Length: 213
Image (tube, rainbow, N blue to C red; front, side):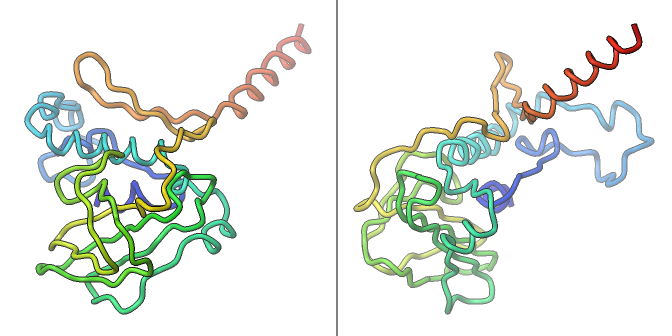
């Protein structure tokens, strides 16, 4: 599920601790629960480090490739193309045309929610460099696939780019909606920054204080 929402268009939202499998002992509505239930158990970062690293890789991919952060419906309609003819358990599409000036011209994103391997036919016969699979995620090539067919393992995701038309890694777009920092103790926090709005609020507050004086 992490691969699905962190590669989707729009602003992603995740609860604190999702990236290291935080649990509230099965309580889905903890507004009146104790700190013991609601508190973040940081030891889970170490216990679930593979999941933590997977989320870090997905966030890095999103930050470094603006094709995953299109800002208008027109951009999405112009640059995202679903792949037809897949099984009911598969959703697959491509992000095209160096969307938002991404250095990867064509990006393949595919999810298989089924219990068996599925094969999809992609629109470009090329070399696909895989950067996300069921175990690892990021911007570095994990493996390569040749041709116009791609196999998606069960209960898994694949993100790959057309190696023949790529121009290297893309730089993060300035003014990104979120940044992720890893602190010295290994904790992972997502900071949502709305710079312009904050500045406006501060200026209005200063004006009101002057008027009162």
